[in-house]
Image 1 (spheres, rainbow, N blue to C red):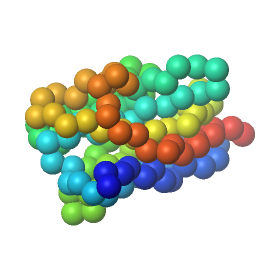
Image 2: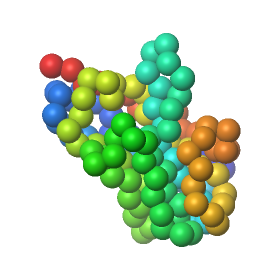
Image 3: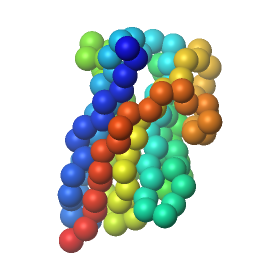
Image 4: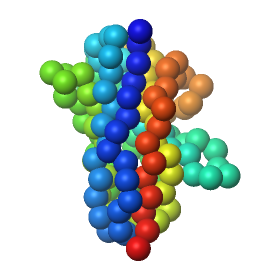
Length: 125
């Protein structure tokens, strides 16, 4: 069964850091686009970052550029989202998702086939 499981969320103070993990099972992360999305209460789900494993290219939302970094560990079949300089507006449930492609990742929810269950990130003092 193809599955993604997120972990690493929690409560952090403004300016702090968290690293989210997205572990894949049932498939390997070759020729896939893996994206991180987030959804705050009352808001639509938005793309945060995406990595295309076949072309090794990354994409970031303007709101997180320079603060977040997406990366992949092939040996662990896991994608990470390192989040630094966190702000209260980063508070949301964070989801990872994938779709199969050999092209550059398109960070739109409609492209993604399978989603994880989400992990809560709360940035507050």
